[in-house]
Amino acid sequence: MDMNKVYELCMNSLENEFKSGTNDCNINVIKLVDLIAGSELANQFTYKTVKGGIRQLKALGFNNTFEMISPYLEEVTVTIDGDIWMHPTVEHSFAIVISGYLLAVNEEHTEFKLVPKRNDGTYYRIREKEWVVE
View 1: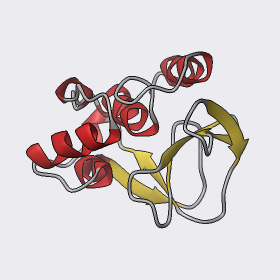
View 2: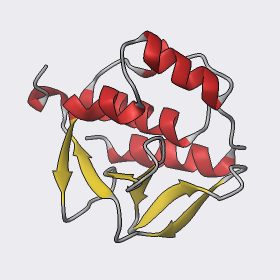
View 3: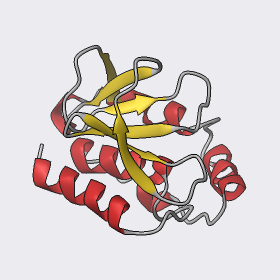
View 4: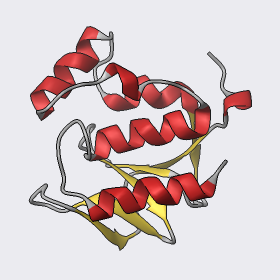
């Protein structure tokens, strides 16, 4: 895994405005899966609203982002940079573990921030390409 590219993805999110389909928690997690697992999932999305993103997921045969990326994930209890946190009750809410924090969107959905890691939800590690079972 090229951690420099993971950090670059996270820095890009912090430095740019939140924007559905370009810089939001779902597309960032999908881009991270592409980066680590060698998939090309993000190329399938061109949405500009949350509803548009959900429509595109459904058109691809998925109910939510987790359903689409789950073949690339394994649940973990000890996290490292590049792991993904999934909200316990909001199926479209993700964050990326980075430097002992979570890269997460603020409550107003206007920007990304580094926040303390959470004890609720579930953490996942993305399998590198050679370990993905399709």
